[in-house]
Image (cartoon, rainbow over all chains, first blue to last red; front, side, top):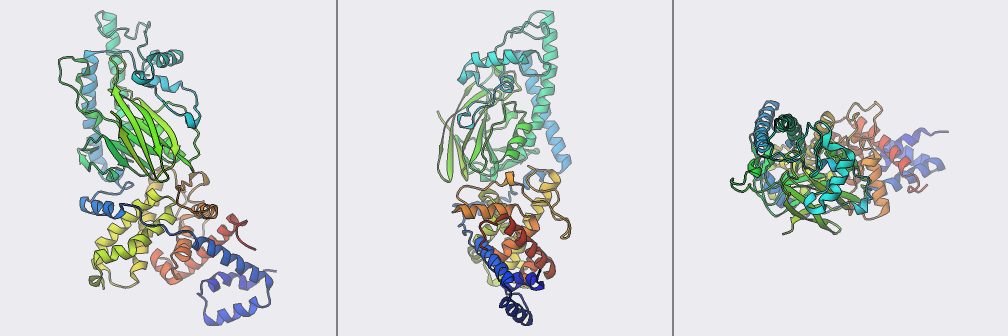
Length: 369
Length: 180
């Protein structure tokens, strides 16, 4: 039999009953063991929930709060929708045009066959504790292995796909050398250039998508600036704290990378852009993989205990995670960056590395010399 | 009323409460800080207009929960990370899916001090959003039905029914920990 009083036990426990009802419940409890057991369960549950520990404010909370108040920076989640659609469209178009000019100029000067992103798609699944290089950097991990992987995957000949690293290409449609002289090579260059332009537009779109989830307000060294609808960090620190479920540091805008890489007489390229990302759940990983077009096999990660740290290089820089030191609350990702060797960059793929590490609230990325 | 409360006093008294509420609502420290800061900034902006129709803590809880609900709705619209159910905030009598699937629990290390704490937090995250808000305000923040109703802008009867439903769901999930 189900007692009607049972429905009142929660309110009784919460001291929310009218005095008359309270008396009725107490009287009933004296003679109904079922309701007494139910009340005990509710008390036990209440104690369990109420017994959850009270957390103290995270270190630096008030400082960050004050900084946000002063700067008026929106929250991590609100930021992606700060600009109206029209403004974002204009910004995207402007950024795309700039990148198009960069790529076109680069394609005119040099037409290197090598790139590394294609190799990543052929990488096998890696045990999480051994996660190292998802897109092998030829400068750091050896050109031969990346070349072999790309060759096996036949990515160098796939329309629109990245070329293998320094892969000799025998297909007549693809260029084999950087100094094109023949008509067929020029035709191939034009075709490839067109592919690159389109690929770069797609890449820019993906990049902007990723920027929508950036949490730069947690970046202690550079404030967020919204210029022309493209969110960038003004500073280029060698180390930066990032937080957030999925956070990213930007040391410079990709669009600012010089187009003159292949031109020996041009001035050196501006500060390179390297991005660090912290991924704390499978849904975030999937979103990142999708947003960045990452081909690497999805790692198996126990997200309740671990997270992924990802460092993206640029079209000009290879990156390598050298070490990750983890504490109970903090983790420091130490990485190196170095220029891609000539011929290893086709201007559209970005090398990256990731590693599964124990979860930590605060993650900082530190560039090693 | 508000002229007697300086911003510093307000933050000293309520920042921790808001952060803890946010922590139990979102389940991880990073999002909790983000949410708490959003709520506190909104509260500080509105503080001069606070009329004292409810207690200051109820008022700031309400701002926090509303900020959280707006986020959940926004995430739902955007499909961001798919961390929240698509069935949130439909209506109290409709069957609601858990706001967070079990594989999206994202419990931060250090958030719980014991296995039981971890299990309780996980169970909370599996509740639908409205039920979670009600149970957290009642059991953790110690709010009365009237205060919860004011904070969530719900009738008291709805608060009661949601609380009852949340307790049933939690009892089921925590069966082996709840003494019988």
